[in-house]
Length: 173
Image 1 (cartoon, helix red, strand yellow):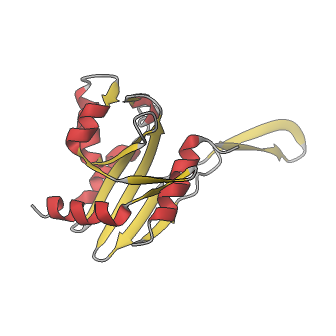
Image 2 (image 1 turned 180 degrees about the vertical axis):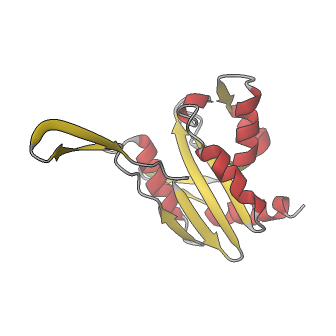
């Protein structure tokens, strides 16, 4: 059975018909293999992906990290797993290039599937300020761009094209 987060990622990807969107597969966290026939097991850890999706819609490139949660705030631990997890900083750093944008997409399942895209730089700054140990819905609304969703029987469709059009007006200011 798929988690709600995986369903959200699938719905998001299926909705992005206006852009080339590539899903970066989650690598396995570890694997075991025998070491030359000895009974010891060796564990290797793989690197983490920069984000969940990389998208392109002429003339811009996008990095998307998707997060889905059922409460009114996101625990910071769901975004930054530990101090060594530098993905958010790397995503934000990609924006030093013209036409490159990175977002954390927040999906609040218990709030009528409210979905907002917040620039990775803003999320990084908020987390570094240590104001709270969670990111509240109100902050996401003020700092994000709403991505409208439509319930189609049991799954959602997202207005990615509308989000990009609305966002481009803000980014060029």
